[in-house]
Image (cartoon, rainbow, N blue to C red; front, side):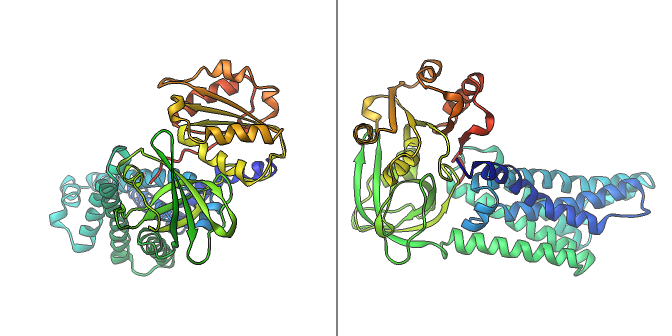
Length: 424
């Protein structure tokens, strides 16, 4: 696609660069001179960790312009996790390095430093911040944590960051770099809590129609009450469904890929029953209020300049449906559509009809059961595969199995595009 080289560079470097700016600035300002080695290490670790905590907070924002600038929410959240983990390790090194410095003079001083009950309240703040960070980082290792509990743990992370900065402020006062970190953290946390989690920045829509699809899936038609979101094919929104006469919403924002974009801002969302909330949404009814945030994502970004190979697995068909419904193909496009059985194949009739009306579009639909499909056999049917851009959307085991097959056939790494869609 014409914009893909730029998009790939943005996706790869923007978020890590954003993560590095606060810690580098903090260490540059506070770099110690003429101090013992371990005390210098303690100071550098503290400022680098504090800067990375601020980066982690900024990278968990859900704001469309920031997300696009930093390469999408997927990239932002990946570096949010990395920044938080590294920050915790650095901040844990801070008291240990100080204790080691004291140990070289008097072991008793080292033990006193590591005993919070012997210290003043500013140092208590530091220990409390470390404990909250350790508590909050539970979400990194608990992949199946329920959403409400995950959110509670994440709030502990935010409180830990604020306590950590308060600890530094109590010890050093209002240094310029510290004020910058505090203001940045407050703005990012405020946006995330008020605009995103509470939904102050959301757009109100209502459910016009619910169409049931094969495979425990519905397609929801949504119309805006006021201004509509400017959505492109391949993007997703965060949706929170309200209550109806016979339906109770989850009260939570969850990501759903747009499966169609119509006139007057009307959107279609494909929603498969994959978790407790999406299972409840299968009983959705017309008239229900829904708040949307976004759009997000850079999948299918730009206008194609080369032939396309699309690979969809299950619910991964939704972004391709949005693209196919938006306009006819300008480049030869082959879609490999994988599903467990014919009873699970959503939109298959519509796709078959598109094949008959669009000479640039080819469909290879295959029921693969519960195992992985025969990728070597499927890819052997694709002409000039090395001359194509490859876009993949589906479960990560499918993506992980397909990637090496494509590379073995000579498809360049920068010609393969996918988004994980595995964040909250």
